[in-house]
Image (cartoon, rainbow, N blue to C red; front, side, top):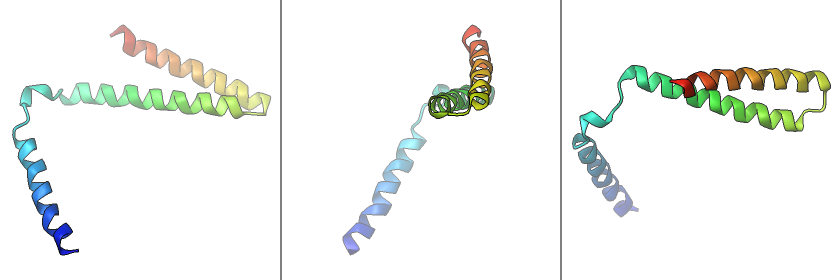
Length: 82
């Protein structure tokens, strides 16, 4: 048991050392990160809507999911145009 506790700080120190040597030019700016997060959020919402559309029984709910899917696709098309 004691050995496991001894190894954890060494592993954490190794991760911290890797972070210090990261190249600062590889990280995108905050605006770019925000756009990436928004696009990923829309893609995840689209996956959820498709899953719900496949399992929906109520025709009104299906129609709502189809409209929502079209809206999400329109939002995604703005990202592809950029």
